[in-house]
Amino acid sequence: MDIKEQFIKYIHALQSTICTALEGIDGHAHFAEDRWERPEGGGGISRTISNGHVFEKGGVNTSVVHGILPLAMQQAFNVPESDFLACGLSLVMHPVNPYVPTVHANWRYFELYDKQGSRLDSWFGGGTDLTPYYIFEEDGRHFHNTLKNTMDVFDTSLYPKYKQQCDEYFVNKHRNNEARGIGGVFYDYLRPKDDADAAHLLGFQQANGNSFLSGYLPIVEKRKDYPYSVHEKEWQEIRRGRYVEFNLVHDRGTLFGLKTNGRIESILMSMPPRARWEYNYHPEPGTREAELLAYLHPRDWVS
Amino acid sequence: MDIKEQFIKYIHALQSTICTALEGIDGHAHFAEDRWERPEGGGGISRTISNGHVFEKGGVNTSVVHGILPLAMQQAFNVPESDFLACGLSLVMHPVNPYVPTVHANWRYFELYDKQGSRLDSWFGGGTDLTPYYIFEEDGRHFHNTLKNTMDVFDTSLYPKYKQQCDEYFVNKHRNNEARGIGGVFYDYLRPKDDADAAHLLGFQQANGNSFLSGYLPIVEKRKDYPYSVHEKEWQEIRRGRYVEFNLVHDRGTLFGLKTNGRIESILMSMPPRARWEYNYHPEPGTREAELLAYLHPRDWVS
Image (cartoon, rainbow over all chains, first blue to last red):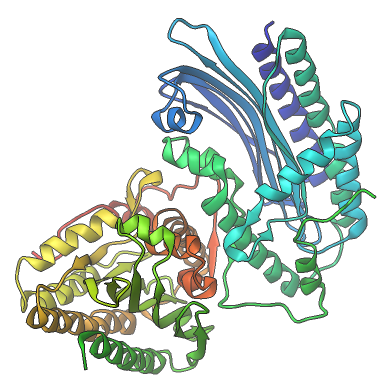
């Protein structure tokens, strides 16, 4: 198997592993599978869950699409007319309980070919980030330390670099640079130098994918039965409004999908179940809600 | 008074008139006023309402801002470094009852000056459009006929032209060209040729502003006590998700505001109180919900 076949096989296996584990902790709802085809080539497997005991709405999607590189992507990558293959796993889970954070992760691989089918370029990308509604410092430390420990095996320079890239990316610039959540890691354009390096980077992707559950599930387990009232649920909905704003205004993948006639339901799978907007809403100083806001700027989670 | 002073005086008077009438029909909630200043020049008066008996969330805002034209607007207008003045009234009302449509309207005036303070350019723009959750053909006809009757006084070519521009603008292209609602009118760059023409266009703006209540209030009056259940409220929230998508992905005014460091709470005043996303949701064929979708494409409302 070449590298793309190995990665595709891996993301399908990971999709099953993650869905099974999330269903297990939910204890009620199951993922529904939806296979779709892309008219221009390839397709995907969406697995979505809703109205669970733990997860209000979420999806764990894989896709493998290929064909002629859409014009908008030609321009974005600054390449001539080419063929491409893009494959990846994307997930977003929005829990019921406001004390359980929303999580997002994505691991992807991209190949570009000339018109004779020779590979011109290829790269890996990915990341994982956490969006809490209430702050528990120990949860943030656990999440970030899991990412750091996973990456340190490859190179101790990676976590700090990719953590910073995540902090720079998931920002609502129009909200006075408020972060979407407490970050995680984000990386892109990891280009294999040769076959050995491609295998190395595939291993890096797998290590990150494999550690996803150990970063997130313990937090879900610890907070899912935390008592809450309508007040906390409303705050969760207001924060989910910020999630919507980030995804529709700033998220490159979402905007790209919307511009390139992507499959809309898969692109917007990340949207929260419900969001709320109130004019000029600010939580009272000294509350648990106001406390969150102080954490929505880059900070050290691992020292 | 020159034309800008007359228009500014008019929008402030109209703001009061509209708010008073909307409070009257609500019968419970009142608009709260929020005066804000723009550090670079000018400011605005936001008047917002929430948790009323009729209106769940809404705003009727005026602003008069001036100063150095932001770089993004220089590029958009393709002009050199200039000074500008922009003034207008913007309103969005989101009702409680899903049988009452959301309404949006905006009337604005723009002037550009060279560095010596001479006016280089000026134009009026505006529009009104309706976003129902359930279709009542008679309501759509009333709304569009009010717009047509108002514009026909000036020129019978205007309503068809501006109705078409509205149909072309308020479209969720990423949702297979589904319209945001049933449209209305939309116009921009109405440039006065001389002082007499400026007075004429000011009269046109005033006629449109003055007819707003007669287009919308009878519909509110007729539907506000229509019985509904949780099911209709959920449908309203799903449709409000589409409203959010349009405003954050396609609305030029919103995107411009976000890019030019506008006052975020005024820009996002238009957001609905609550929105909902469900994966791949489609109403059952033959239902009142499915019926709406057939109307979300350009159609004749006045013949």
